[in-house]
Length: 441
Image (cartoon, rainbow, N blue to C red):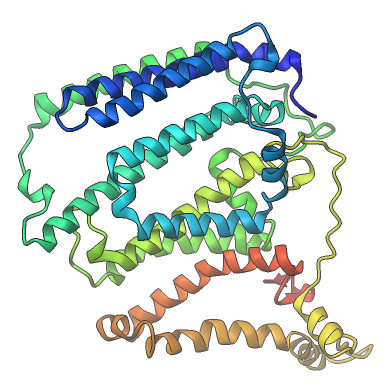
């Protein structure tokens, strides 16, 4: 389904106001920069951009739907074609890696402001597509869009403070937090600030509730379920995990390991630097582990489940129509089938009828030998190997017990992206599959 004239007429008012808001935002920024010495060039740049946004706003508010600015159909088709789960995951990882390596460049205010305007412009041009707008403008999904922008802003702010502190530490200066270590009274300073924030947030939520009513539906019924049936946004990451693992692992073990890992973190951390101030250079391993776990293994799963998972839990492109008739045949196989049937060209080992429990257990172990060997090497042999190679310094400072706990928590965390990529590329369902005792991994 493509954008129609009737849809563009309906969304034209929103797009006009959207572009006008972006123009006003850049106009204010240009005025502020104009008053600062040495920023006249940037003021002219954002003034020109503000004028361009006003032109887009006038085109969107015109009576002709064909004048509403939109992404070319070829671009939208290419995005749909290359928006598969593998490219999405690898692209997200590459983006986070680039932001980390070139963080000193991206934390520059004008660079960040340019990226924000590029995102807003891309969002506005995409909103002219009916399929994209039907997903993004859904009342349930509007907060997720705001979450993406807010998360990007606060991540940039924290990274900027860390880059400034790292530069000051390298020059032998105290951190910003230490230099501005000023005591503030709870009453009246803090309480007044919290009161003002409470009033402002309450007013914002009131306006939101008036302009965007809550998406209340009819009472739940077992004979009529939504397609797709999605969990609340904060559980979408967990729902995505259930696609790749058994419920006992995705719903119990992994969340418990997250809680246990957070509880164990103060006892595993041997680096006393970076306490009370922002820093990346002094805590690179902790920073990268957090960024990988929080953004790649949680936030990106929420975005994937919100905007790319459609009817029948199939993957859809951002500009693709969510049809319930899309069928994707997946011939999921287990590792024992790939090992015995595909590699050795032999049937799966089976215990003879009436065999004793010991013989059946031995047959199961033989059948799952490949998966057990892989998981054993991954969880048992890999930690000591890392201790004498890449994590030699960590092992020396942490000791055997703390290092093994840290290494196994990290390896179990990595099982999620590894299993996701194996499922998408090889249709691998389980590495170990023992249905006799309902144990699958």
